[in-house]
Length: 287
Image (cartoon, rainbow, N blue to C red; front, side):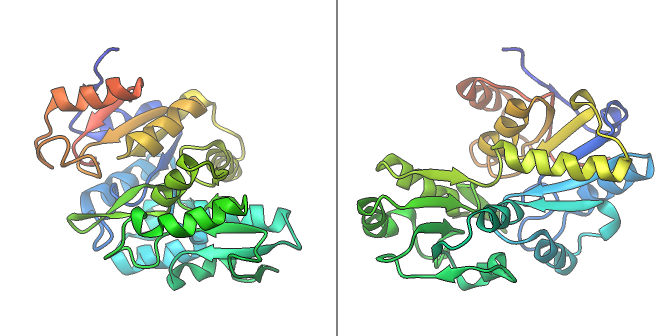
């Protein structure tokens, strides 16, 4: 496997692409505040004629993610539209009416069900499970849920995972996400459908919106994914057939030695273990 090139400026890569599918958490904000240089890079890219679709594993509708980005200080002119795993989850619920749902996740994720004809039920009576996260991601781990997951498995309940991320940054800390629960459920034999990255539905939906913005669908060779996760961003882009720009100062930062000075050997070891490599690597997204 050829080691990807480190680049300092997105401007050197940008002219090769008509559309960017950009990750959100870890690339343009850290859950506490926006990254001004990353936002500026996307603004400059759009000023040059490119379109930017934010593509996120947030278990909420894109309209809710937009309001969160406003609060964090992400300028609206940094992107054209948002596609979330919450949007994909909602589409699944609509396509499976008359089923009862057990919601595994915090109350703040309830907007994922807003305006949908959905009936909730306890675990003993539900038809399937929508998992959006841990009830308390500040104190709990996936092991806290093993007994509940075993109960679900005993009933052969299908799980729809509304956020395939395993961990995400909150400030300088990593917290567990719904993907960690879904992975554990799969390990004990449960059936799981992941609504977001690295799986195809969210990319298909994002490119459909990009095509609507540009009045035509860009060829996959002119589409670039930007992200900080090997498991979701890089794997998803590779499987879908598009290039990826990998940002190191995200969830892999601790593995790489330092947030602003990653170890290239450790980075290439991560790519080699995954059997995939990005088009290029940046420490942080900047123009």
